[in-house]
Amino acid sequence: MQNFKYQIFTSVIEEQIKNGILVSGERLPSIREIKEKYKLSITSVQSGYDYLVMKGCVENRPRSGFFVTIKVNEDIPEDLPTFSPVVSNVEFDEKVKHTSKSGKSFEQISFNTAAPTDLLVPQKLILRKMQEVIRKKGASILRYYHANGSEILRNQIAARATKFGCKINSEQLIITDGALQALYIALASVTQSGDVIAVESPCIFSVLEVISNLKLMIIEVPVHYKNGFDVDYLKDAISKNNIRAVVLTSNFHNPTGILISDETKKELALIAQSNEIPIIENDIYGDLYFDGERPSTICKFDKEGWVMTYSSFSKTLAPGIRLGWLNTGRFFEQAERLKFSLGRSVAPIFQELMIQLLHENSYDRHLRFFRKQLEIQCIKLLNALRLYFPKECYFHKPHGGYSIWGRLPKEVNMPDFYKFCESQKIAFTPGDTFSYTDAYSHHFRIIFADRITSESIVRLKIIGEKVQSILDENL
Image (cartoon, rainbow, N blue to C red):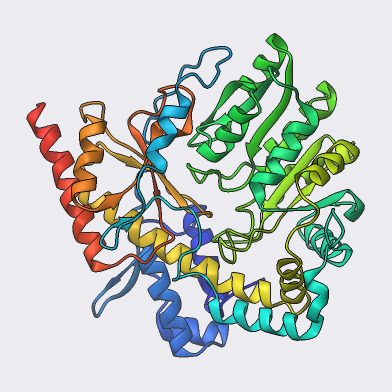
């Protein structure tokens, strides 16, 4: 389904560039030719070409037309991390303090909060629908709802999942107080203190905190730029260890932005089934794809209930809407008991709000513009990073989600780098917080949820020049 009129031709051009049908320097059809061929207005065609120029795959040559540009080299060698067989959280508690030691000041430009900002939150829509819910439901939203959540909402979530091939039994769904509670319930349902689990690496620090609180041991499975989650590494780990669960993000992994292929998702589902090891799948970013169709989940290929998928509406609507969900699969009874012990029910007003938004299709209409704005933010930030930082640096291009994964050369002293960023009032998330190890000491995560302004671009330029001066000193 096309989200914008111009995508009827921009998607064709992008696909032809990707497949080598259109090559670097080749002239593209004129605005008038595209207008006639696709029956579009001149404004729509111009918007489409502006979009392709912004993405960097097309350039506009004055009085000559539009041409395919030279593609940026994405084949940067990555440093493959070496992990210990099994690790614990010995130093992690100290590392994670980097993420919360100070709040955002008024002058600070934040590239470290993976949540919708005022730029992205549909405030008018949410407040209007909440008022409608209050008028319609009255005092009933002040009472307890079912501990597992509204039956209507669970049915809606299950119905949405079928659109991307995932069959979920709504009776095995549990509505949770956000995604982290869903993860906690899933992990606590299938593990005990001291158990070993496999975790994607790098891994978002909030997930590592849950694992730490449950006193679990982990094996870190690398996520690669090209192929994503390393299935062969996981197979080897399973053959040598008593792994009780696997935790990973299937779509637009945080922090790398990697999207796991359907082939890998299918293989992971088979690994779970053949080894009887539950996979706990984070699909919180699945709705935030930039191009094409909504990606599938590992759950789609699960035949025996070994995959527990969880998600939340906090990343797609507003961070204050604490409403997530967990597909429990074959572990429903354990998960239901745990959910009940953590609280009677999720706030009824949030459940009724989502019921309203999903019923009226307002949520999907919102997502259409939300995704486009995120993509524009991503392109602007990625272009600035590649322009102003030295060529020895690497910034991975995501195709959805919130984050860009950056890597600086070994010559850069990272504590000094972060201090300089702080002096420029820019905040990134240190790579150390994404692992129990020091495998990502020269990496950092950049979030593009906030507005990219001329001031933020200037500050990025100053930081990039600082990195270049460090490299020059080491020549």
